[in-house]
Length: 279
Image 1 (cartoon, rainbow, N blue to C red):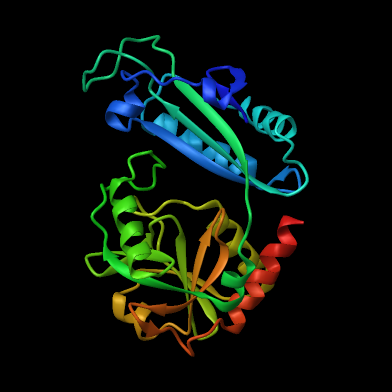
Image 2 (image 1 turned 60 degrees about the vertical axis):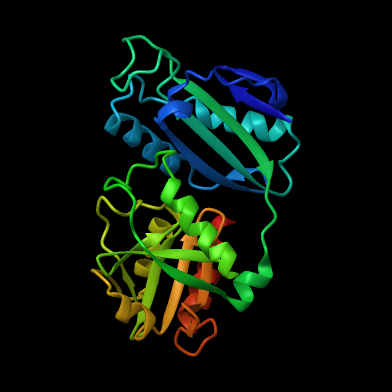
């Protein structure tokens, strides 16, 4: 498998990461995952804009990564992944320098790694729906920056796996934020209610697309805080959103059914609209 490593296309097995890389030492880095459908990337510009915004927020010396779209398509072609579905993974760190909490000397090159791999959706999950559990949101306070510091996301997702469910939903002080690797929407009175974007919630690309589709199709949309009770007891439908998740119905939270305990009509409509939008 060919990947991209600091400006060159090289075999994946030849990549060697320095133990002094700040991504390894401090999780001082950013990442993105972009979906491709039959050789075409979906909303690449949105992912790139979020990466560049994160680079500015972390005060990286470089925040222009416009060359990466061509890199991504080259990797798809070189790895023979233009026919089916695939994902492009990108990670950029502050670079290699002797370990010190403060930034390394000016001019230290960023470390940049990118790769692609085949992706196989699981239609049965999207058809039947999935179960989730709730977890206290104990992450740092700047979750809107897509950093590689994902320790609590990892711990929460492992709890979900151990419990035999699909995802963990974060509640901060009793208010829904997002999932360990997804955004979340609630259906109430036939309309969509979304948690308000803030520092605790990633501005998900799929979330943005789906809310745009709702508004275009006349589905009512509101954004406000949602308590655990509103989600667990009053939601008519519950939806996970993500690059690989797409539009996923949730049928149970903490062992209790959501609504009728099966995917509802609003979710089905949004699934169809989203699939049409990817071409």
